[in-house]
Length: 412
Image (tube, rainbow, N blue to C red; front, top):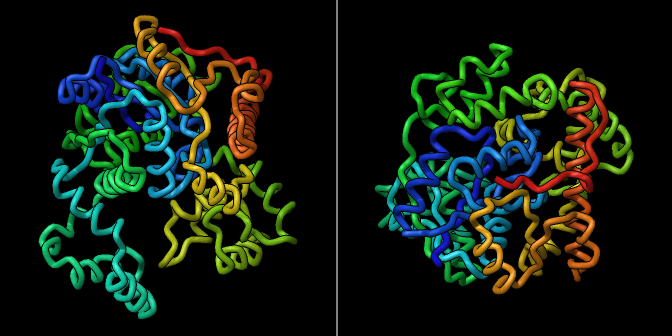
């Protein structure tokens, strides 16, 4: 039995994702595909447009065999943390033979060369990096100049570091190398629209274009051709009662949390430094809504996305000290199932036999199965994040809040 892993957000699942699963299985000769997927909040620091169960169903109906939840402390973090958590989860299952990811580059050798150089961080590289940043350059600018000095053989390929999927792919490779994983890495060239493309101009449009079309056009009709038929069916059924959840739906919850924490400052939270904490405290009285507040907080050296992630870390109570402790113990302590295919039961049996972490199908079993106190803290954070997302749904569409302990696995 051969198994390929894919790390994803599926926000939402679209035709390009279905293509990737098909091609990943074919490229690696895999019998099964395991997806490690972000839960209800994603790396851009915002809620997913659809909840994790709807997105898991979309994946399972289009080629995935098992969908596991990436803990929110990694799912809503920078590329380095995101990759470290996801790769650790795949590796500790004990059954993943390959990891397949999309990239603009499409050349695993070039991406691996960058990963090796950036993982090594030689003293010369660090010195050049610090010198350039002290001179006022942003981290990407300083990193590129440092690489020119210490790895001249990569100078002709520096444009690779301008593309988001390449950067994430390099982080996956660094994580595999750091963890000395036996998992073999493969990459597929991204097809169709680019990551940042915001218009629906191809049957392989970006997730961003699909989200923005749903938000702008206040409906899902425009995206029918951009997603598999089964996914459009999921959208139709959920539209107006559980979907879509948009970034501005955080507007009412966020200021309450910020006001509670203002007196203590915010430096305890993941990635929040003193300068951002001070600016946040100073500008909090100017808060009107989520999107405009992110715009107000961003600077030349801090992007909108990083601002959004910092605010989400505060909202979800994701602390730097905790994440450092989790990473020191190899990042993950359990594999939380969101769903599986009925015909993938041999895969589940293999995971249970070979995994070094427990496979959790019912949240109520977590206290019994997770041995580490750190693992229980991660799980509690996941449950809290799910309930906050459920509150966003309830506030927008009405009805009762969904209790995460009562949600059922998706079985296809």
